[in-house]
Length: 388
Image 1 (cartoon, one colour):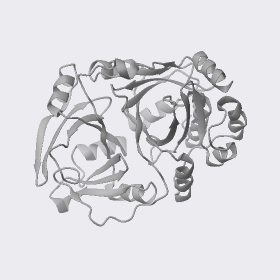
Image 2: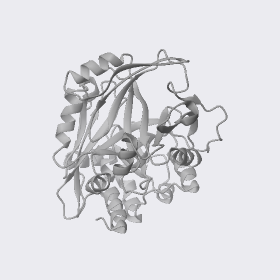
Image 3: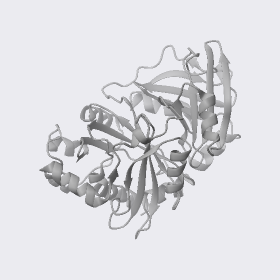
Image 4: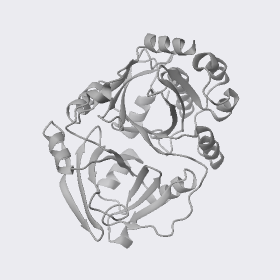
């Protein structure tokens, strides 16, 4: 019964799920997955400590003055198949310093693992992408790393990385961290599930076309402002995926509403299009959220009324409702299964970037049944900041 209700609600809401989207994506750009995500931040050492002590990431490699790099400091942090790089400027000048001064801490590079960086660069630039780095071989003591890159929305780039002939810690110029401080334990974060980009009003379809025509992605889902709205604000979103389905990029734009949407708040403080949040997949959201809360990670909360109606909407999701409510975890169900998810508050001073933790049981969706309650919770946070 709950499956039927959920399917009907999703259809009425206007969410369009293309089950064959990944198969329809063109194959001129075979991507093996996300190689890493690089953040440009104000203080890389402190960022690395935050992600080690609170989120359980392990320091893997470092680049900076001690390794011969004169303009920046970078820490590579890993947890299972997630690899984050935190890079900060050492001085007040240069593109990293300018980026941080304008945007605050934020995502600079969502890098893809490929077998042929020259082919990836040629195929995308020939279809209209603007080059950020021509195909380059970076020689080091541990071999050769190949890399190229293109621009996407805002100042975010996509690097193409080939590590087949490189056997070092991360890249030439980085030294392996041989005696890392122990990372916090208890959480289970496995891989990047999806990365969400916020773009300006009227820009969503342009970047949907960019990912379709330039990178060969296909549209997986479309949510319009009839789906993603509250009494005060609304937004529109389309989800793009690559051919093997390993990479999923929702793209959001604000929609007209009585008050300012969360997307517009992001744009106002980031001062450009950018990556709004990254979802990390887990197979133990209850245990992971419990230990993260204990360490001080701040999550959005849901009102009691949300959990009163949840059993009738989603049925059994393997976790008692009182536990979901205790931890603030949301649940949703569609025709393919169910998912559990939760969102952090912004993880830096500006109300811009945040994280999502998601546990999937068949569902390939993004929690459409939670959108109204989630966005009302976000609006509560916006009101506290004086930005609603």
